[in-house]
Length: 492
Image 1: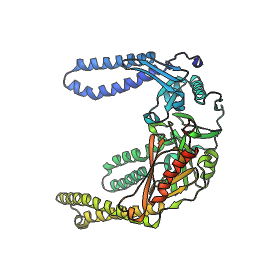
Image 2: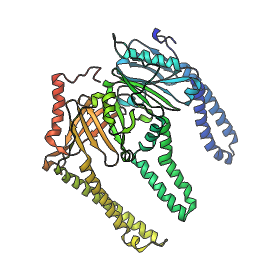
Image 3: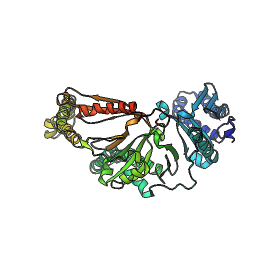
Image 4: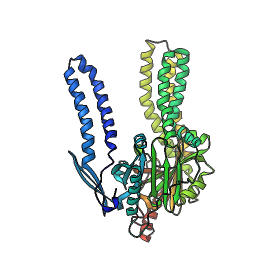
């Protein structure tokens, strides 16, 4: 295809049978669900008509969509035109394009094609692509290079990826397994523990319940783990100049490249299971760059904590500023204690009556031990109260803040730990808020709003001195006045 000439072009025709299969399966499932009712009601003719209409729509609409949807690499942006029932005439300016990524699912691998995914800078398009173009693999690579060349601006040479992709860190299949298993949030682990507990219970008392237990185990842990292992298989990442390149995937291939100036923040993630083996992973907040389901792009699979600083300094040194973390002051315990007390009271007011009446109702049908019948509701309330105050104590020990010359870092997370490092110049809004419990001690909490891979994100600190947090806003204003902060394309 002659993309450079400015001529209009369509997606590759192999997208037609793929869309046909997707629509046929969708309509087929709907008809299958309704068929039993239609046959019982004696509406055989209506069922036949529905099947014929679904088959016709599955054939007609993919062909019409393909034929009437065209694309063009114009002078100012990528143009998308669609002349179906709902008309579309859209131009995606090169200056607003955040990234051009290539994805390959199983149908792409079979048909030798790739999806060119174009993401804009912010807003809903940060999660939902502005355009997805199905092309032959070679054409997709060439279109990506052409758009990237237009994005770099006049007089600048585009940075193309080499045919041999050499990763900065050599990840193996074992690393993808570790990422898939230990990189899951703790909610998945708690679901697994619940499944094990249920399995032991049913193994001794009711073997019929084992099926449900294994279903819970599969949904909460096993299936997400396998999906992540396959997704991050053959993970490779490297930096060429000011551009970071990422590739991974066994069945579903993902290929992305973005300039480091588009990175607003990095997240060092340490879920509970990962902390047990002393490993962490790195995610990036990149404007307009997401994976499927709006996930943030992963810059590095799980590596040892002692190796992590070296990876950051080599891959994205802009965020490797060496600044000491400052824990919350001792006075922070008072607003945290007040919050824990309020949550305990509210929990007790809701939980105690529910459990009391539930135990009372159940005691009429089942034989319940006297300890549970007499003290079950009270014990549950006491346990939740202890958990609230334990949570408060862990927050007091964990939450921290570091203010450097170019970046600031927030540490938080009682169970799943996160260390978020943000560039001053990427923060959109800074808001320091004090509540009635923190104000007497001169403390506040600060929130930072910035554009991200998922549209927008908000980071929040623990309790720190109000004058320190308000000084962050003053720092941002001073950087604007002094010219250190730029609103040019390179800044955003």
